[in-house]
Image 1 (cartoon, rainbow, N blue to C red):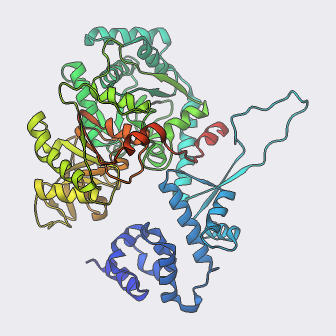
Image 2: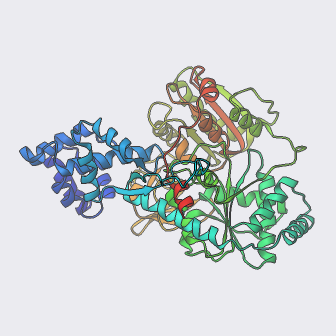
Length: 580
């Protein structure tokens, strides 16, 4: 145990809190965690597993009579706790009156004072906006209407500033508005690329590519089963970038998706496509991007903060393209970037569409049906889709392990290492924790000598570091000085020095899997979990070749797909873009 962890443990023992919380508090609060926690016990609320009642109890143990309900430290902590809860649900900000009401529900007698305390403590930041509707001014009644009173929003400082930064850099790119090439030349270039590559693209796709050449920021919508058409579009964009001598950078949220996109390009090109695909973390590590075309694949999975980093890395005059499937769930991180850019009407939207004669394969057919509210049986002669009913969570877990370790490798020739379990919950017998334990016992048993891991373990990265980011998966290869070596899915190796950045990676929650693609996916829906249409769709579209859908919901899967859409999110990006 490090000296810093020991110091935090000692403070926790003094307030009768579990010393096991020390490593997480150190990660959340930084190197001064022990001193900060001793001065403000309510900082315990930085950990999501700590309740307000538990934090109050520890504060009384540490501070005695000085632990008052109206203590500014407590008020600030409760406000920040509310904002973190909202961020965990995808919101980037909370309107001031709404925030005061939520804080009041925690028993705070003077919510306005709590909000002030949070701002004074630097635990909350305030942002104002006057653009609160899609309505234009109406001059028919005569005169100029009064400007509306600005709305006030509160946000966690880092998150609020990230959204401001994202909006600012998007405005910077949009304002340049210089085409890469004119419409006629772009069309000729696309046609030449198709002829050279021995493929064609649809008229929809051709028009979309011309839009990208002309417009500085474009959201390109696509659907399931359109990986080949998307790859053809990327090869055409590379030709546009080459002919105009601006260069192209293709980025994916994770290393595993970068590898999948690279494989799609190689398949269409029938060899080396000459296009480099980077994970978002790898692209950001390389520093400012000099390319005149920057394409982000799977952009629905990218939250506000990571999108801000990418936009900031784009050079002045670069064209930014967001490839997005609007049927997917919103990102696990706060924000709804692609949707907000479209809603702002400050950028352009186009659509990639595969040829009708191609028709959707079984995986795409099921995904499309789910997007329309149905979960039908589909014809899958190559076992691309398998429905696996289960009567309980325990039976679902048994089926999952059987599928990963035996059935899929044996029947389809897909190695267990290329299979990912994507489950709708973290805890419980069929949750990610239990399934990771079961998969490790079968696939790579060991003592966990490397901080609970062994060489050969599948791992998930849950934090950003040099060359890796949240959502990356890989294989732990062994120890190195100061950490462990992890081989990511695209073949690159990174050194992870922060133990808190690693989780077991055989089984992932839907949020952790969003933005990743694997050859085979086992989707798991245990009993008593919230089921929504976008979440089921997102699980299905994580698979490249095969999906096994393990359903232990007793009918709730069909009901959720039919009736439940993604909840709305409060964000400020639309207003920032319009006001920019």
